[in-house]
Length: 159
Image (cartoon, rainbow, N blue to C red):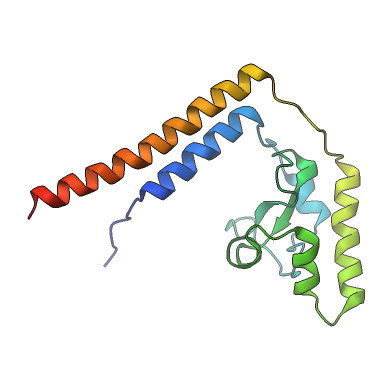
């Protein structure tokens, strides 16, 4: 029996944050070169990835570096979603290859080679963009508070 998907306020807020980021710093339309450079393997653990079944992710290797190709690496769902989280990419790679410095060096060079192919640009947001972004962040926070208020109200009226 297939269960109904449950949507959460946290998921909604995350989607809103992602939508804002996509407006400010759109991701690349074509990531073929990413798959080719990493040979369809996770940059961290080396697992073979299946593009057809979406078992690969473009991981933001450098926090705050944007959505452009020079800040993305190909990574499996386990490394990206379950293990790495907000950990700095080089430290995570060191942890994934513990006891094998040659493997660490090899994978580090592949990642650094990608960064050299697609140098990151530093962009400064215009004051007007910063202002609108702050307004949107406040709206997302307000959304979360109002959803909590709604949950409390619904629970109180159902008792």
